[in-house]
Length: 345
Image 1 (cartoon, rainbow, N blue to C red):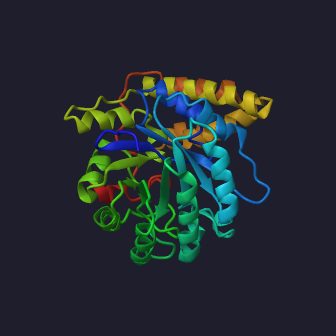
Image 2 (image 1 turned 90 degrees about the vertical axis):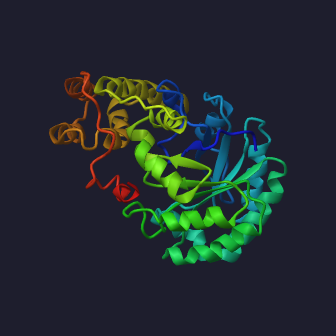
Image 3 (image 1 turned 60 degrees about the horizontal axis):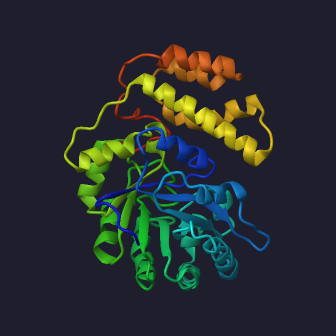
């Protein structure tokens, strides 16, 4: 692996959310993470490389390494797809998704569903490690399917392969995003594996990130939902790592971030979808806004969710965000989108 800061930060892959437009937006909001992992390429017998996901690798705007994530369960097809990806020198390596908790994914014995079949995990890891050669081979996992007590056996499988990095979302597949993370389980991975371990889950601000690192001694942090809510979290974390006080975020900065994100996502929609429908794009933006404005103002959130037109949405955003009031560092504790982070503090 190339040299990374210690500790380092990683943008978590979130399907149809942390995509190329989001990467471009991060670069305009403080500089982004130290390492990037793409949304997953779906792998099956008829699969081809999704052009929009591949573009995030070939047009990588970050100046940092980017790893291609894949999701699937057939060893031959996964190797075929990895080989196609590795033809591109821009691809720093391959990551296998063993953590997605979506029922439609798990029912196909992929993502987090694979944690129910450790022999197949072993076969996949062996086949992909060989396929990657000198390039990075990394894994993103949950701590188990039903229970965190499954993690010991899973670590035994990981230890049999030369993994270059393990990202551990500190919840089980069944827990999805609704519980505190199992900090002690993540620490076990740090203690037992030779490769760098990255702690993932419930990093919503600098304090939760620093606490997660301190309790696990992980090599780095992976941030997803917290980065959507606050794209400045990566430079804030870097400042904290070097002993500096992170700068607070003003609502006006949040407004500018949303406007940039609108433009970048709209541009990508034209490029990869060959068309642009304003109402559909308003709905696309709500996927981000649900995270961004959670807890800022109940009336704001209520009206945002019911907006249908760009003009209506933008007027609302300017009314509530065009001021220098500071954005709270933490999201609301009772939010369904941010659950259990208080346990890290």
